[in-house]
Amino acid sequence: MRSDPADYELVAPANLQEIVALLAEEPGTWLPIAGGTDVMVQYAAGKLSARKLVSIWNLPELRHIEVLADEVRIGAGCTYTDLRENETVGREFPLLVSAASWTGGIANQNRGTLGGNVVNASPAADSLPALLAYEAELILVSIRGERRVPYLDFHTDYKKTKLASDELIRDICLSRRFSEYFSYTRKVGARQAQAISKVCVAALGRLDGGKVKDVRIAVGSVAPVPLRLLETERIVQGKAIEPSLLLLAKKIAVAEIRPIDDIRSTMRYRSTVVGNLVAEFLEKLRANEPAI
Amino acid sequence: MTTNISSGGRAKCELSFTVNGERRTVRVHPMERLLDVLRQELALTGAKEGCAEGECGSCSVLMDGALVNSCLVPILQAKSANIVTIEGLAAGAQLNCLQEAFLDFGGAQCGICTPGMILAASHLLQRNPQPTIGDIREGLSGNLCRCTGYVQIFDAVAKAVQFKART
Ligand SMILES: Cc1cc2nc3c(=O)[nH]c(=O)nc-3n(C[C@H](O)[C@H](O)[C@H](O)COP(=O)(O)OP(=O)(O)OC[C@H]3O[C@@H](n4cnc5c(N)ncnc54)[C@H](O)[C@@H]3O)c2cc1C
Ligand code: FES
Ligand code: FES
Image 1 (cartoon, rainbow over the protein chains, first blue to last red):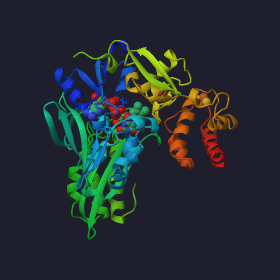
Image 2: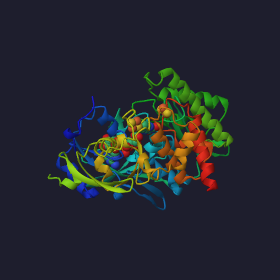
Image 3: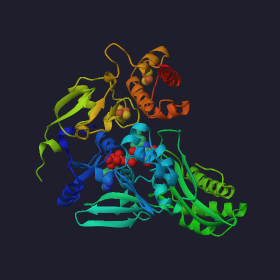
Image 4: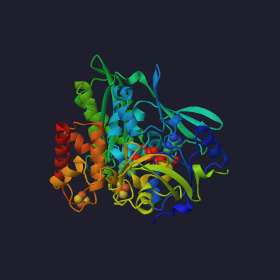
């Protein structure tokens, strides 16, 4: 059933300091709302349990992209459109820009934020494999100060994160050391636009003398959390990409994931596709064939 | 925490924003959807409710120049914003070139998706005056149509592009 707006409180403090003070005052009571593309959907369906919301939309402290010598800091309040329009992000983080370009339609990209995608923590979220591949780090802020945590194990279980109830994500930090890597990403959905992923892969790689020097492979929609395929990465490290390695990598990748049957796809389909995409990535890496 | 009324709260609050060039002030609950405020408070019924979950685009409006789904915008977030709805595109009886092209090419049948399609197309042309057919498809990919099969809509937008280039 539809929600009655009279049952909900929404405030829009003017700055980040006031917002974190409010979160600290009654921990777990106030739900931040950024672009609302997840929160408002739950609200419209009468499924939003929070009754008190605090707007963080368009907050200057969260909506900027800072290019430093060794990393790019993306404010958690940046929209997908902000990412697509930023030159440095476009040049150095193609996996993220591709994910942004297939996140819903343009209206969704004008409102949906990267911070919202991380905290909403859907296993099917499209930018999260890219953040894993780039070994992102998050800067979290609260009235207690700030802390910097690796994104790799930020998701602890289905829709659970390490974010404390009085914290906000302020920045998503991406190291610039991967800018020369080969990039590969694919989203497999029921249709080209506006479809939730059945499988989504983001990968980076580098060869040296025909052998794999370094790879990062991350996948979405195949486990309760977005996954980095660390074992698969380890197995291919230092090896030449040949048919026997492709077979082995497929096998290991499929063993690392925990896909389920749901309304969008089946366990079997997802396993087969992940294996095939991992093999496709490695083949393209070997051939250095543009894959974005 | 006492919340001052201009920054929201649960009770109704007064807030102002610009709609189609006119300053408007409404007294509403801060979590009311921009879509409902436009339709019910301001009697601007061009934006339609199709799905209420961001999927169909029939509620599209421009907010500070950006295409948004008004069903997903709590009104407090539109405070002081500049909103353009389909009602703001024509200059009096003079239709905008996209509106003309939709009429000429059968881009509108039942008309439910049309305001959103035209605003999405207008948003696209503002950013990219010479879109390819691929750009047009992408620009309108968040807008669903149950009637036309889309081809007439893409043709209409392509025609408006040519028309604009000539004038
Ligand atoms: C039609 C449609 C299509 C979509 N398609 C896709 C898709 O293809 N791929 C995809 O991945 N997603 C998709 N989404 C989901 C959604 O758009 C994204 O998850 C988006 O990034 C959410 O961002 P938001 O700012 O709108 O989040 P909100 O709805 O504002 O918030 C989501 C959650 O994040 C929290 N939050 C937001 N920002 C912060 C912060 N800085 N610190 C702490 N907590 C925060 C909120 O409290 C809330 O719990 C789609 C949604 C719609 C409606
Ligand atoms: S009613 Fe808003 S997108 Fe469908
Ligand atoms: S004309 Fe009827 S939905 Fe598009």
